[in-house]
Amino acid sequence: MLRCRPFLLSIVCLWSLVPAAGFADGPEAGRRRDASEEGQQPFQRTVHVSSLNSPTAVFTVPRRKRLVIEFFSAEAFVPPGETVSRFFISTQNPALPPGNVDFTHYVGPSSHGPSFGQEVFLASQSLRMYVKAGDELVLSATGDGTGGAFLSVSGYLLDVR
Image (tube, rainbow, N blue to C red; front, side, top):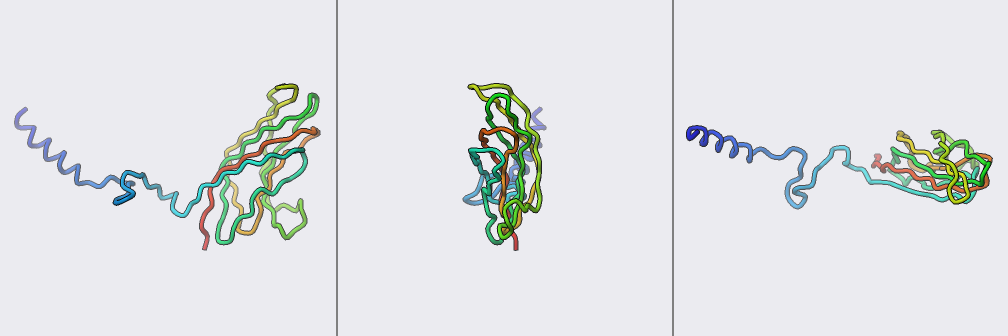
């Protein structure tokens, strides 16, 4: 046992000289660095639409940026007997007339029954969607209902040259 101590001590000393991979030095010491964070700015947005079937532009991507959407969630309320058929996340060139979308992801809702006298429809979806500089991110809930919805997205903005 006595002969092992110097050996273990030398291993511990050598291990302490090895820099911790993925950690910053200096004032950022202790903060874990992630290569995927380089040039990324977190993005999240929630919008309330007071009526279904009314696409809403929620964000215009600034110059030299690209918006990457990674997650969508929604909650819609309609009167009993009415339904929500789908939620959509689209990209649109604002120079074109409304409704002329470039790309759309459709997310199907699931009914969660009545709550406080209204039918509740929920959706959540992990996805990958890119919105280029100058384009708008458009969200909407569609159906035969007359209720409203909360629509949320999260992702990040990337620097683009």
